Amino acid sequence: MKEGCTITRLQAVSVAILFSLGSLLVFGGEFSAGPDSWLAALACGIIALPVWLICGRLSSLYPRKSLFEIFLEIYGKVGGRILIAFYLIYVLNLCSTVIRNCTEFMQIVALSRTPQIAMAILLVGLAFFLAYKGVGLIGRFSFWSAILCFLAIGVTIIAASPYFDIKYLEPVLANGILPVFKSGLLVAPYRLADIFLIIGVFAYMKQSGKRVRWLLSGWGTIVVISCLVTLILILVLGVPMAQKLNFPFYATASLINIGEFLTQVEVFISGSFLLTGIVKMSVAFHAVDRGLGLLCGTTGKGQYLWAIGLFCTAYSAVLYESTVQMRAFLQIYIYLATPFQLLIPLATWIFAEIRRVRERTRLASVLALSNTSAEK
Image (tube, rainbow, N blue to C red; front, side, top):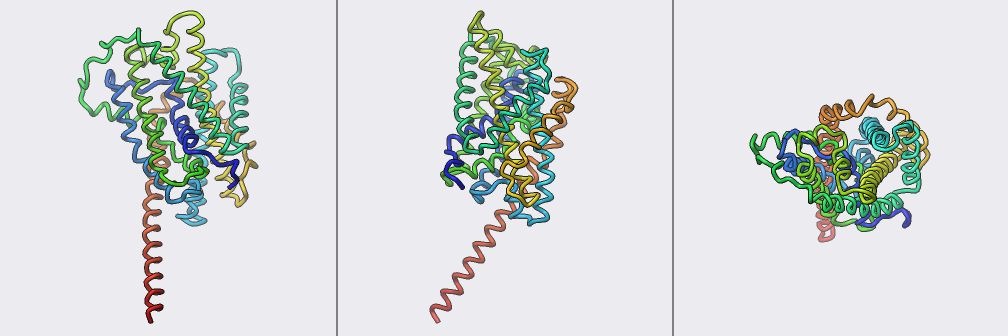
């Protein structure tokens, strides 16, 4: 691995945070739990925690391998390639969804007369450049983008404080805890559970130790931000209004002050959302490029990126007919994503642990035999 392609721990964590933060900055939370929706954001983090722990453990067991390379290691050439093929379909759909989310947002709030395909080409071009240059550039870009995103969220929260209405949080847990966890379960698949792609990014970390701890620091950051953003939306807009709006966090920013400061806050939020989308696309492009290389038996170091970018751009244009359909799809996304986000990574982790125990047992047996032979 070249030194220029390595990333620091902070850069790796920044990639993980932005990878999972994107939709929150504009779409906000899920408000089916009513005034308790901010607790649902916490429940979402708890539900997704096992996925992050599994990814962290797999990254620790195979510190220089991506998830696709781990598949080949665990399941063999045939089984591994079958899983890679299914995952590539899933990741391509994920990347196309991110592109469509970004272009839909840009067209509604700012560029109503600009064709979405033109905006998609621009975003894909930026993501293509990052993926082509490698994980090193993705990490540095993510680090500075994370700082801008945190600044945008912080400014919005502080500036929105005069508009808080504590009555919007009442009553607390009026319907019990079950709706809270149900709402968290709906949000987890597209908010926190796609993190398995980050294993390929963590493979480029300079420091190989304590990967679970660093990944959990990213998880904790996202959970805190999710709870804060959802809480702010409820306090400012109220649940009924937040449910009606397509982009509630952007709408909250538009209520802040007047004049030039208003425009700057909206630009901050819009820019932060687009930055998270570019990071997520670049990570997905890099993963698919490497996956196709493993599937076809080639190097996969940038040679498939053009085809990936063109396919995702074209597919994103026909993925949804409207924003309403896009949000409706999220209701069934959990059923489609569960095998890829939880079941297969869980099985892979179990087999990896079994394999590790067998290797240790075999090594202990060899050492015992060698010691016995030496004594004789």
